Amino acid sequence: MKYLPALAALTLGASLFGCATSSDHGVNVPLTATRHNAGQIGNVTLTDLDKKTGLNFFISGAPTGVILPLRLYTFIYKGSCQQPGPVAYAMNDQVNTERQPVKGWTFSRIAPVPTSELLSGGYSVVVRSAPDSGNLDLFCGDIKPAK
Image 1 (tube, rainbow, N blue to C red):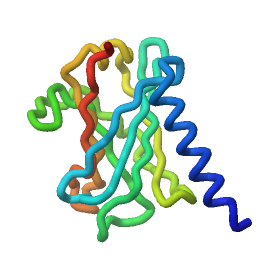
Image 2 (spheres, rainbow, N blue to C red; image 1 turned 180 degrees about the horizontal axis):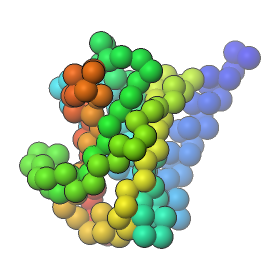
Image 3 (tube, rainbow, N blue to C red; image 1 turned 45 degrees about the vertical axis):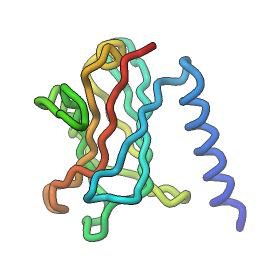
Image 4 (cartoon, rainbow, N blue to C red; image 1 turned 120 degrees about the vertical axis):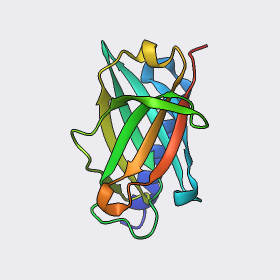
């Protein structure tokens, strides 16, 4: 049983590596922690679901003081993390997360837009804490145009 956390970390790392290197498994978007969540890391993988986009998130943590269980809100904005525009898509029908043995959290969302549209450029994804936890932007990642 001592090896379970290490095995879980290895499995998660291998799956994230696979998503980042294979176009068949989605597009990897690194998430940068904001000043409210300094020192944490995050990642979202965008997967084509016909006329929708699946977003699978992994974050290493959230700031002290957030209420557990961790509830996170996610948005896709027009514009970049440095110059955000209006909210293009709010994906908050479900805000629950799942604690992982590798010291982090996972959650999934679906955006009602084709992946090709998001990859055409000009979008960013934001992860925000719940209103009762300060409504703080925790992570942001620019969705880069497909090359």
